[in-house]
Image (cartoon, rainbow over all chains, first blue to last red; front, side, top):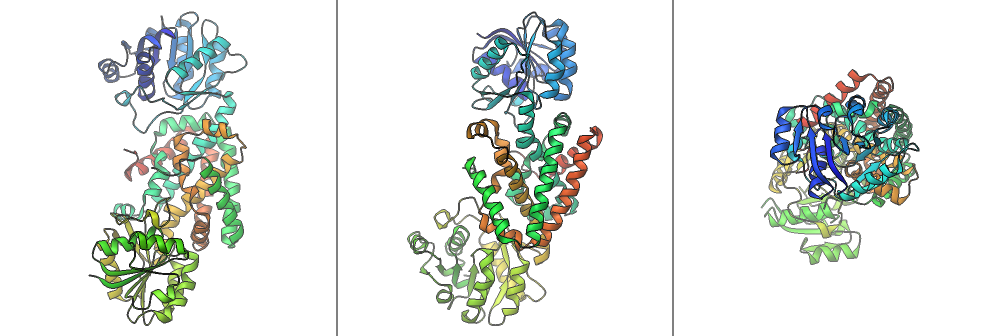
Length: 289
Length: 289
């Protein structure tokens, strides 16, 4: 048993799945949860995701030795400030936010009674809400942990054990390394998918033309663009500098490719495509089955 | 029976699947094929994909009333010029190339003994080669036909019946409408996926860092970048003007988004993401299951 009583603040898909994993894998004896709506609280209790459910985090975190903030990124900093005074002595606080610098910068100065280690599991789905929570959501997934030089080593060790315990793979990065990496692998692709989708929208095609003219490839490549706009706004704005510089780099590379295509520079275009294809193949998983 | 004897020039995944569909669905009494390598010819015969196999198109097309050119785009124009003199009188010639203007422009002036209608099935897979050919590859897929005002209406009607016969959905567009549409839905996304992949490559991460740091989302979004570089070079260069102008539009839109992210313009970023998400959701198929 890693913890006696865990609190999941924000029992949605991620939080609910974490609660299920913590209890069912014997990592936490008890698990309480909070949610903003009565419907979610009821659902979480009914599904047996949590033992107790509260509408407010301040009332829920009191006796917990682990508190996981699973609220939207934009709400994490304010939440941490609110609960910091009522956290139990020695509690381990963590979050699951998709960007880490801002959260870590705001929360670390609040440390004292509690210890904080930032986290970000690469798990999730287009399906949101506690109804889709499942114990194995984190199985074999990367789970970033972003301790800093100020972090308590024992707290980092406990977070690592917790991540291993739920079946995920802990990967340690500094908050800035993390934000840079996900800017490339996730935030930029999201922006590019939205740009692509917007181009098609601006063609003003009829629903029938869209249905006929769009292949599976386009649907696959742009699927991420359907993600929640509120969440993605928070992600982009809390990682603005990396997103900014990446978009500049992409624009520059796109301009080079554009000019080569325009002048029919076959050898250059071929080499560029070949290098991209080779690297992509080296990453594996290029076929669905 | 739509045709007596069909010839598939280039029996790979597409050509082989077309041959299987034509014969097994009773659309062609006989189907002959050509391929550049002895291995492919042997395989196609062994699999029963074709009744006869030839190394050279000139020897194969003679008595055929349907000839489908399934060679790479870059080779179609030269192939058409070579076989034009030996095509049987009244033969229907078509191709499956991913861009249509250039092919149509070269082949239409050769018409006379034969009739040409350009085609482009939105079918395919990362798996290439006749070994993966299957009769149902075109089932419910869009199959573009790109007749012009010069096209023979009877030939267009036969192509339409053929497309319906193999279970695909015929969609008529002019060659330019076609090339513009696929530039947006396929060629631009391919370039963007390659640009994304190149950014990650240029980070110089270790294989372990790549494996740990890259989530399924990235692999999904960039899967197309693994496609054959030769084919994609042909596609981009034969659609250079549309690709050129789209890349300019994307660069402009990306710059607007970049500046909004940079100055933290929450409302604008949120609205942009929300509009993209709404449009993407309207296209359906945003969840894998």
